[in-house]
Image: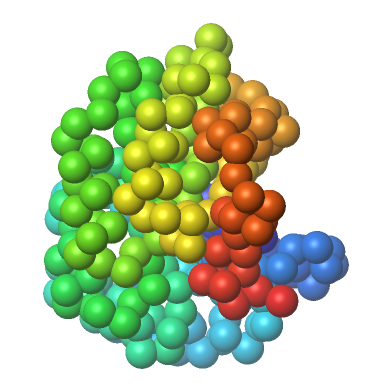
Length: 228
């Protein structure tokens, strides 16, 4: 599946057109303006396409770290919740505090934290990210994407063991049923290929039973987004 990169309506149409042309694209996570009072009308249009599977906006670029908790944004997220549309939570550690309040205010909103919230891998810093992720796992039903890590490491000299502590922690607190692999292609190419991303994740996870491996590498995403 493919996920938005630009915060413009035209990108959604382009990605959905690609999904029409290339059947291997099973789903599209698109951008919508959550603050738009008419966001419901926009979602009506997008939901006519069978490959529209979720919404994302670039939260970590908002100057206000509490942007997602504004009443007009919550109204937009409520629209997603009512329609059963998944929401990709694209945050960095300074924004992680918003996840639990969102889960409390919107208990039926399906959320997945992108890129394991971009911890400070290059600096080998675990806290307070690790405690926040553990709390989110316990107090919400949020999922997490095991993605976007090599670009947060030393992009020229990273190795799989650099990622392992972060992967182990997320896997332990969320469990395989709430963890899903993501390649982060093409952004990952700043630090490596998607094959290197996949290899680094599998090395970091270590030996897994075949069914668990399949769950993390695809099954969890299929279930979360309703792919077919």
